[in-house]
Image 1 (cartoon, helix red, strand yellow):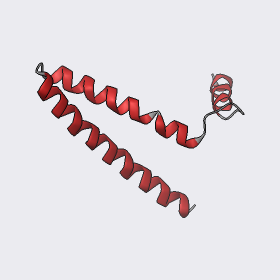
Image 2 (cartoon, rainbow, N blue to C red; image 1 turned 30 degrees about the vertical axis):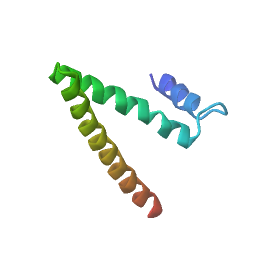
Image 3 (cartoon, rainbow, N blue to C red; image 1 turned 180 degrees about the vertical axis):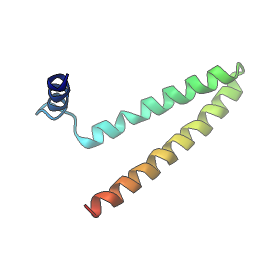
Length: 78
């Protein structure tokens, strides 16, 4: 089991791994999809789905931004 996890970690750090900003750009479609799915499971009207998904997308961006700032501050003190 440990060797599988080690190989998985080593695979992510290889020369063909994505750069940091490419990983951040993958967050945009994830936030759009998750907010649309969440809005669609709660409502059936497209107008309300759009409003709710926009609210959730802003909330997710704010939350991940706050987590990013906290991790960045911790990295300065490490």
